[in-house]
Image (cartoon, rainbow, N blue to C red; front, side, top):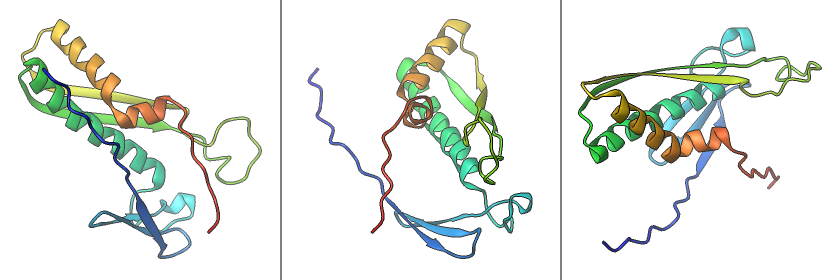
Length: 149
């Protein structure tokens, strides 16, 4: 079978200030709000940026879970996902710390509804872990540049 050529895709967003803690981000035809909880100086009107990282990971795992299950002939009826991320906010608040600003650890707990055996479940997990763009960005260093206009 001939392999088709797939072009790279560029994703872009635009962010606008709503308050010191809240922004509205345009993503394609969608508006997404970002805020901080009150204990981090926000107004608690929307998820914060690090919560959106976990949301992105959950969404990616969900989509891939069903896609990979179909590809390998696994009967996946439902998929519940719980993700827990732990970070130290000291650096965010400008305090001296040797810990990094981001998550120190993320736990992904999957609860698939399926009658598949352990071998097929392991294959399913391995393929998803290998193919997830969001997981790849969390596990590997991605070049990021920040500049002024």
